[in-house]
Each structure stands twice: as C-alpha cells, then as structure tokens.
Length: 308
Image (cartoon, rainbow, N blue to C red; front, side, top):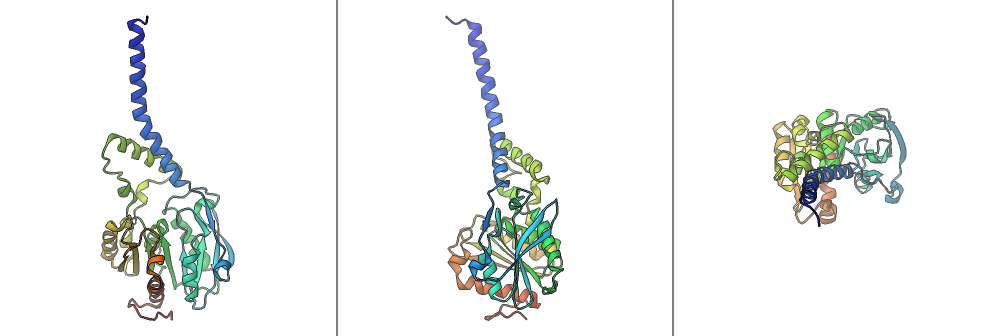
C-alpha cells in the first residue's frame, strides 16, 4: 500500500507538470507559429515566356548579404512598374500582374522573395523594402529606363512592402496595393491580449520575430508610414470579403493626411486575392489607368488610359 508521502510527492509532481504545461504550451506555440510564418516554402512561380512576355534574367545586390535575382520585361512607353513578391513568392510568382502592365507598355521588374534567396526567411514586408530600393538602384543603371517614371504594385504582404517603400522613396511616382495588412501587431492583438494564454503566445511570437528578423514586430505597420508618401497617388484595393477591409478606411485616411491622392476601391464579392477573377476587365482598366496617370503626372481617371 502506498504511504502518504508517496501521494504527496505525486501530487506535487502533477501540479508542477501542469503549471509548466500551462506556461510552456502557449510560449512554444507562439514561437513555432512565428517561425512558420517567417519560413514559408519558396514558390519560384512561372517563366515570363509562359505569359507571352520577352524578358531578361537579372541579378543585383541588395542588403544583408543578399544577391537578388529577378526578371526584367521590357515595355514600349519607358515607364516601369516594380512588383515586389508576395509572401513566399519568387520572381515568377506574380507574373499575372506583370503581364497586365507589360501588355499596357510598361517595363516590369519582378524579384525573388527573401525566402527564395540566401536570406532564407521573410520579414513579411519590412526588410523587403530594402530589396525594392536595390531594384530601383538597378533600374538606374539601365539606359532603357526612365528613373523618374517608376511605380510600385504589390499584393498582400507585398502591398505593405510597396506602401512602406513608397513612403521611404520619394523617387517613386505612385503605388497600388492590394489586400495588404494595415497594422500587423494590431491584427495579431499584440497590445490587447484577451487571456494569459494570448499574452504568453503573443510575447513568444514577438520575441521569435525579433530573433529571426532582428527587427521588432512593430515595423510591420504601413499605417504609421503612409503619411510620408506625401502628394503622390495611392490606389488601395480590397475585396468586400477581405480580412483587412475594416481597417482600409483608416489606411486611406492616414495616407490622405500626408497629402496623398488616395483612391480606395472595394471589389464587391471578392475575397483575398480574388480581385482580378471578380472584377475582370475593370481591374485591368483601373490599375493600368492609375499607373499611366501616375507616370504622366495626372490624377484624373480616363476611359482609355494612355501612358505619355
């Protein structure tokens, strides 16, 4: 028969194990979740020839020891659209957008997501701004590019990248962003955890992000920077079923407060990434018109866009 001391030791062991589990479980889950978010699989995407585009394979140096690779698709009007990669995409992951702009006459430059480079991870938008700056510097070395007629277009995390890059780069003439987050810490509930589990989970996620990216999670906040875009055109595109649609007006107002000419287009019936599928030709007309007007110095929408 077990004596009383045995059962006391067993009870203490159970209590210690339970407390450890309650503390360690949310910490481990938070760390693992953030590690997974910052280490997606690389999706290299397609080849521009599959979209009927001629192209060059390009290489240029970026920051933090990264040598970037991209595609340059020559156009006919001298203006250029840089398309940063969405999340884990490589240089061929967003070519459906590249084809839209290239057929309208634009040069288009795409580049690898950082997870597809020696960097091996994604910051989900912030460090990728450095790649946009490096891509622009590369464009200035080309004789077939007018450095005063460059715009940005990005989807999801690349939409956040594009907005933050435009805020940092006065050389950019305009920016369109689709379905991007407005403030990642707020979306995750970093500042307002509801339970102790949430608090430990989010604390571990934030610490992991800092250890992996060497930046604080607070950098993932386009709404803080968009006022710096100043008096340049901005097109924000969201679906009516997009996760970030509720915060889109705040982002629009923040950019407008800095003097930007902002249009918020909500595609009715569209979820995240479904804008082209739902809007079809209207999507093409709007984005091409926007970028044509941005590089031409006019903010008025025209039925038949022409890049001057």
